[in-house]
Length: 220
Image (cartoon, rainbow, N blue to C red; front, top):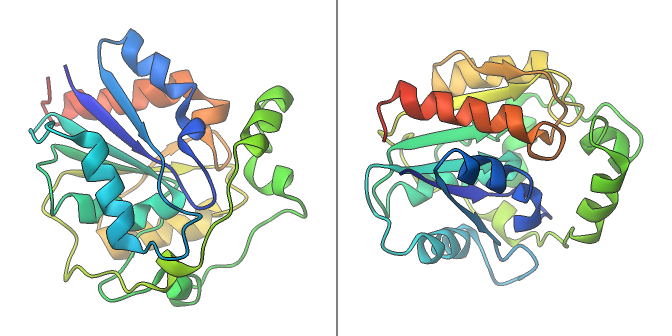
């Protein structure tokens, strides 16, 4: 049995993964959704990492899979320096460079900005209305602290990494994000037909993609 540790993005919560978790468990795997301290103005990237490490607990083994959404891409690689990880998957994730604060990531990557006028249009365009209402209710304030922290690694960790790009993503437009992944990770992203939040709009397909990655790298 593999363990999926699920890391949400900015201003979000573990609720983001509530539809994906049962899909993974139905496939015989363990799923742990982590609440990052995103509202805490004293919490930077180190505290985000600590929250993940604490949630993972004794599961320091090669069948641990980290899945990071959006700004979770700044946290997940740092966890790989603390615990043994068998696979790292970024889902519409931000890919940091050494020494780069999250606040500088948009300018450094040539980010074109979101394509939409409202939060629903940008994040939840393909998410069912009732799920959008619940997701908004579970949303949280995002402190500026973590975004000001320089990303502390000298290079991407030596862990098998996959990137799942969302073709209809209005937050991180697909054409631009393909270039970011190629330049910063040196890999071709895989793609899913969804908006920015496939764990809410396509949880079953996302689970199947994650399980295919697991089998591809030979995890149990």
